[in-house]
Length: 156
Length: 168
Picture (cartoon, rainbow over the protein chains, first blue to last red):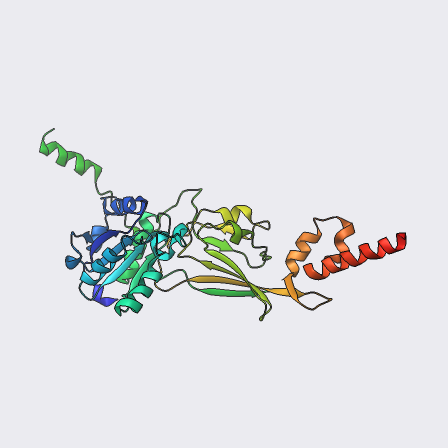
């Protein structure tokens, strides 16, 4: 991820979120947590951005807009999925009106538009703590190492 | 308030910004973070999977391999703590871990071996589950506890028929 070694400019996209993740984003931008020390700032257009910050389970209504915004971000791009809804659908994983998270979006992108999935950082939590968001950002920048890993245990 | 007094106030307050990724932070006492599973206690009763709202914990029975598989996906979890509440053996505890960002899908899997029915040889439940249940039920029904539900039903019907024949 050394391409993102410098400042990441972020375009925040709410895709049907309940707003608690968005409030945590504001928390992260306050002087107390101050994510701007990593060079991160919110921009008004996806064309100015390096990263797309997704919150929410991607409703059917927002799906075309999400795809439009995602294709408007210049390469190399990064997607940051914030909150359990964006990561795996959360409690809306099988609701009729949402597509249920980022994996489904990537499947649609691959099958219908032929776009390969961009590098993604997923930050679970409902909503994630501000520190948790900073940890995710630091993971994107390569400052810290990933803590959770897939494990398999077999018992009798 | 003039602008100079603002400068004075801010100099008195100093820097409030946390140095977070480079220092540890304390979380509140009742904070619910990543659920921790204790494979030595889990008996595969599927109580956690039944109450899991976002379907983060899923329990599937793999008859071919003869295991019951508990899969926990971090990405779906909303950290409500209901699984830790309902777990009868308290194998699940909510830890204080909040640094959960990941790149590829993270799954935690516990596989528990199924026991076979002594009559028909079909795998039906885990031995831990049987031990747990046998401590809680009447002694009269304990004789059929090792049988699978089908064999148990057949056994019961046969015994009823036998006792009815004896009466006649």
